[in-house]
Image (tube, rainbow, N blue to C red; front, side, top):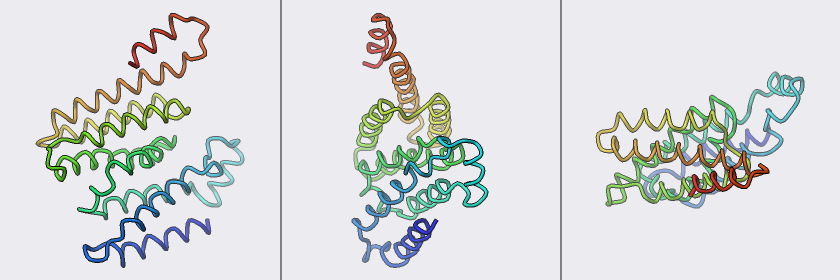
Length: 213
């Protein structure tokens, strides 16, 4: 809790002194995001790994601190304005880690950052696409699922939120929708592959490998 309060102090200083065009400090903002993500994903805050009694006790006394810092990460990302492009694709992996934490409200609040990244690269890259973001998300998703993170609920929510945002956008309607469906399908295959890796049947394992490829 003390640490969270300290991180929140950093956020107000960053917004006040290091955000406008003349005083923007890329390294400081980068450090902030990595620090906040490290805090949010720290094992001692992963409430679902505790017994129900311990979980209730912590929530009663402190609340779920992951949500508090997760919402702050989201707000700080949107505060960046035109500076966002400087964090793509480097911040895709850390934001993915945040969205994979199995807390529904946190996921709903942070998954839309992916759409914002797509939109940002599309507008500022000069190529009218979001290939850097796309490549990075697919690579990191593969690593995270292999490491044991991600679940069916995440797949459903990711597809739903990306599709909702893309379908409202004048230029990202088609490419965004194709990307959302591609990521959803990849995630499904990766989750199947992870489940069946310990299967005795060579055929099943091979079939899943082919699907992923």
